[in-house]
Image 1 (tube, rainbow, N blue to C red):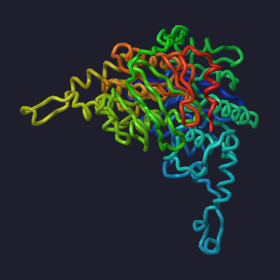
Image 2 (cartoon, rainbow, N blue to C red):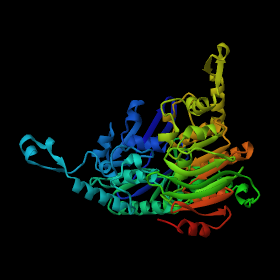
Image 3 (cartoon, rainbow, N blue to C red):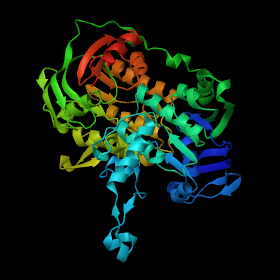
Image 4 (cartoon, rainbow, N blue to C red):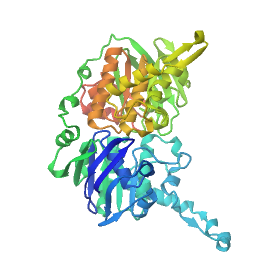
Length: 523
């Protein structure tokens, strides 16, 4: 890619980008949230959003010849595949149907022999074989017959990757945050797949905020900051600390240090604010069988565990997004399960792991996203007119609260009027947090709060949660696949294994102790 430039809505996001990738090489593309990584890859893949927003400047050279990709189909035909940060799957199709979409093997029959190939039937047996082969390349197990709409986010990610691995003509694969929703074990299986692809001559552009993965699998590292390449260096000549410093332009050691709150000992006299007993949740891909858990008032409780063992199912079940049973009490009062509105009326809030499917109004402004839930549930940001007969939006108050969180969370945007769809993935995650903060809840579930967020933004988001907990007295439960993140942020960490609470440890406990709990009841 040579002298690439791009602006969105008057906001310059790429300035004179240059890099070279050889056949069979793995290039790690690093940068803070909003640095321009995803936009650069959308240019390379011919995404419609680039053409629809005025195109770009510069050249793409493929095998030494200038290439122009007006659509993703052009890129696919040239042997370029992409696994997007946000899923591009058909929800009503199975994993197999998504993996082989538009490339399904067909069988001839008597009718098609006479009237032509359009009357061929699908060869389902061969489809099953090919999808199983692609899934096997990843070294993980997913249900190929499960509908995408029923899958947890980690399995959706593997389906996306399997779709690309099933293509025989693949020359270059772009992986945009492929491990963000994966556990360490799943991520290692994917890294092994990347090594295997490179050994077969397939080039890979690997975008991730897990910098150790970059060093483990990449040949070359390109670091971007504010839409520019600030470093292009062999992976063997750098370190996590160097990459972090180049990404953020500052030393992040202080930000990475465990929070003082994390060292607090468990307070046995603390009041129990939420009591969960015998909770089961019918969430596809998650096993929640018999969870009993007491959460202390004012604490930050972490919930961790391996993928599929039940950690994500707990908040989704309590908040009524999936069918659940058992009992939940908050401040001594029973909370009706399977009723999201009653949870919200009780001053509970939830930031989902699925920010685009559940968390955001993508085609609305940031102001509307931040204020909408508070308006609907609490009648906030509304002005009474005609003696209260009519209520009207308080635009000034809506703008003020949105700008407050844009500044506090350092959300990169052109203005508070910008549409949520136009933000980078990490900034969308921050808007989800802002929406929850605007509700001023007494109790907050936050699921995978730093998924797809760079190291600088991650420290900022976690500090925002600590500040919200500390200054507002809000009890916070953080559900995360990253154990170290929980240990740095939380007072206690509960590990879920086999659909149950395997144990609860203070955040200062050793990694080995947490590891033993994670595998104690694995199913």
